[in-house]
Length: 283
Image (tube, rainbow, N blue to C red; front, side):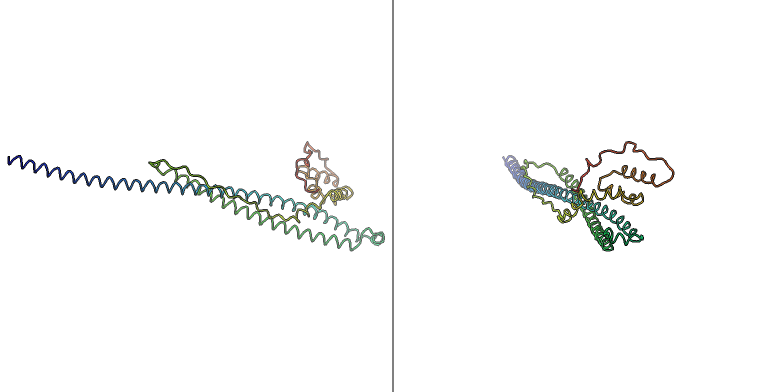
């Protein structure tokens, strides 16, 4: 009987020890479960933040694309206006040279009496030429500023696009959560406004070179001497939207007419309707 009592006490002691260990293990399991739930919540929060950053990058990319298109359009308009000013300057320079030669000839008195050429006309054309040169300088400065803006926007867009793959890689490295992730609704893209700083008065100025001006330049080109007509080639090429090949052929033809030797240049199939596909802003 004594041995049985001792065995019973030992068994009870072992049961108590095992029960204590079991309660400790249950506490450890509860602690681990709490940590797992905390990590799941943290992972879910990180995934939501990653999605929010992706949406913001997408919106910024769309906004930058819109700004780039706007700057390109402004640059195109300014370039067309510069071409117009250059054409008018080329024509007026030849006009000034012609009037200067006429004023220096002995027949200037007769022409003054007939009202053909006067000093006032020459001064007026010179003032117009100076005004156009000033406008051309302003347009060149505007184009330079637009090109700088375009370069800055491109650099900014490249930096933002470099950040986007890094965010995507971080999202892929995150393990999947135990509980299903709720679908995230992307934030609506804010409306992007296209800011165009093109001055309407500049566009109206470019339309002043109309058909009458084109006719006047062509008549001047056809009625001038070969040397004067050669200086008008650039103005005629801009007004009639000549290609480089057509402008070069016109130069070679005039050089052939002014020289004593040489063969007449042939078109070689370069003459084609170049005006039909070009953007005409003279009318």
